[in-house]
Length: 118
Image (cartoon, rainbow, N blue to C red; front, side, top):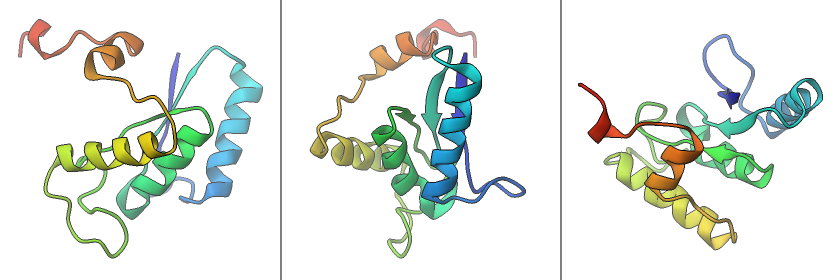
């Protein structure tokens, strides 16, 4: 089971560290070890909460579909690759292992763009 936490969506829980910790603790209590924890956050909270999700043992998703900016007061991100490189650099500097695209596809049981009929 994959459980993705997305704070700060309209009508959703606020994008605070406390809310993320609460959602992770609730998932742990209800699901035990039978889920994969992943964090994405809309808007300016994307990098901060994504980093915190990794610290809590989860996976991180970033991209322009969730945030057009590079964080509060940092202006627009030019593309997805910029955001991916930034979170990769942050997590790498913190000593986390970052999955390569082929590893992420295996972890998430994805086919890959070369194996779909789009």
